[in-house]
Image (cartoon, rainbow, N blue to C red; front, top):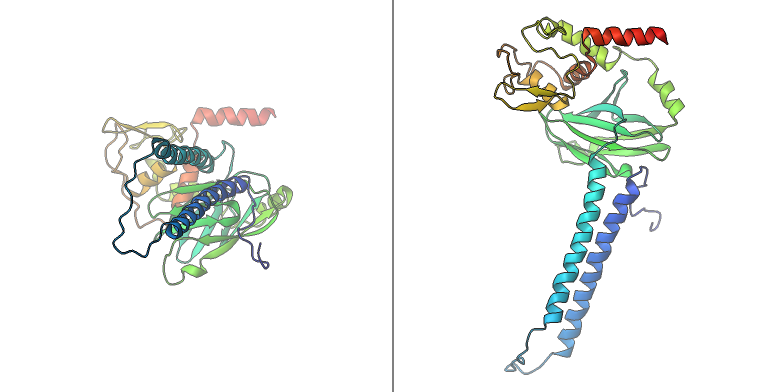
Length: 323
């Protein structure tokens, strides 16, 4: 910190220190060689200067040890940086199995966050301390970039595609969030804050007044209102494939390939259903492109995650009754 101005944002996640250490190592290495080269240039310029405009430099011969040194040393340093950066990268982009899932939509000029239990926020995100949080997001208009400086994580919000970031907060308080991609005249105003709370306080906030119920409940209502339930029956007798117990599983396609039924595939099937047609079914499903907002698509995706076959639901109910 210099004159009260920090060189870096506060470290407030489990990965922040690792990102900073890698960054400082790269800066130190590049600074060292920049200074070294500058010093040698100045020394040689002074040592071998001449006032004779006709002077010719002496013939020199290459040095094998010197050639090996300036080839091998940078190679070793590059491999170290590559391995270190790869380790940090994989941890940044592979969230733990158990995370608090939150959806977000970027639009000019705001971030809208949707919690699974129904709470939604604009330019503000409440999360619990010490729990891994995964934010899955997209853009409703142009390219945006969701950036949490204190957590050292950032990813582009691309129209028509889901991106995600994750972090585990380690400090209580309020931290900045920004759009880090120029998105228009009011880009600088597309800012907000993350509020990290004690787990008990977060639960109390989460169970506050919720308009419209949980995200999956909203999705169920849309699923019925759009008559999706008439084709996608859980018993598999509809004109479309059953979606029960399908999320996270491979889906066979009509062209002989298969795809994992994840958030991106469900979204794509809602908006462009003919693009990857399920094997054994006719291309009957209409497109909902332009008819559904990104928030409603997210609600439908979350509802599809909860769909269970009739026998699975009965089994779950029996377990609940025996408790």
